[in-house]
Image (cartoon, rainbow, N blue to C red; front, side, top):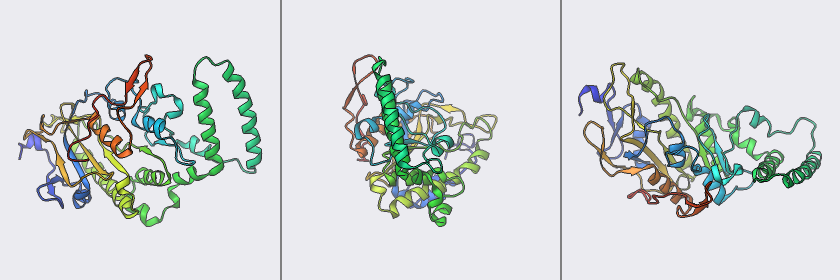
Length: 349
């Protein structure tokens, strides 16, 4: 209903929930809106390209551990799988004072190749080398004044288990999927499919990024290119989890670091807008098929149902069974709550 310079070139379409409309480039999500919740009044961002804001729920860089690191610390691994895997390219997920052993496993090309024993290398020979390495580590630990070797010991233990079991490498191999399932996720959906495989194999937290959204110019051209790909991959992930009976046990959250300017600029783009943004949640046994929060008619600022990134994290911790009142000793030697604002989003839980 806003003027063209705010509304832009794209139009809304109806969904399978009465009264809820979303972008015309999201037809797949429109069909499963009853499985989604849209948060339209997320506030508190600082307007900078800082992934740590939505990974930690805090603005201060390198001051708080990522959500996945907290879950790794409190819940640990499930079998041979690492508890926390990041499929992102940026290094915005850090364990900080929880220790390096609780950082995310990032399966880049070399890391993934290193999970396979060289040809002709037997497991018993590998085990003897592990014992030798443990002996060297004990000597080094005596000279280590800090706790870095403790973290490295955990990395080594986990690495040996992953290599000898092979289950982790299999989980990353999307070629083992039915071709019809791969096709359902689309050309850009490989990491979404990989995330489902990892969660199914026992990984507790998986993060991934998709596309590039800094559309200071040619915003609508970029949206026409990216949104259909995202629409297909996200819908496939949700429907795949539901088909496997996993959707109520797996929470999906999608958001960025800030919103975009409601008014289109002279270059047909949208700039940074930290005053309000949207987010999407699915699964996790939460109440879906609803929109929470409102803005003024031009989408400039929130007018009701405000939530912060801390509320988003509190909701995810609720699904994961983690008490956000838990404290850790921070870098200053003082106890620090997981979250200062520990209320999950009303209407979802």
